[in-house]
Length: 210
Image: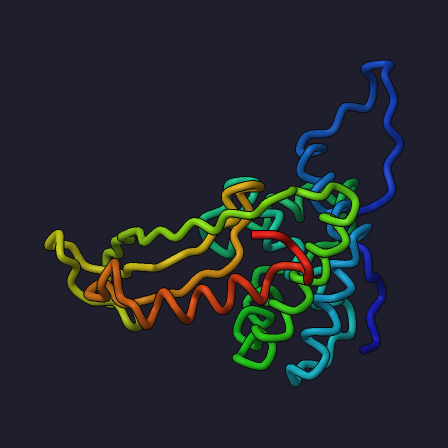
């Protein structure tokens, strides 16, 4: 991949003089964490075979910026513009069109590779701060939509939308695995729980007590 930059944040200098204040500086720390733990690089490698020629924006940086935007409160893809307006922190951020191309190119092979990249990053972080015994928490939540989105369906509460199922590490509050399901999916579906449990265990570093 011929790209110009493989970091998701610019190097900044932290001072205590109260000058040159920059908004979203805390958000930039999330990008810095992704770079330092190898997540940005791992996402780039996961997207290497997606079929897009990346000439300006590293795909790992694009996905990292999207994740940071969500952590900053984004609820739609165009909210990545918040990061674009803070170029002094994030440098050149991909346009909404480029970000959409990255999302569209994330198919099943890329999703599997991304999961492996996240698990590898988790191993790096947990090695520095071991969480101890692990408890995996499952929870299904109704998500209403206002139009007929793909795979949306009526819910048991007479709404319309999705019924995603998630697995979290209760010790660290990290999401380990998520499953997008139609609104009529059962909250206690055994097959879905077993499939998600397998994914959640695969997301844990080897040798972690649970």
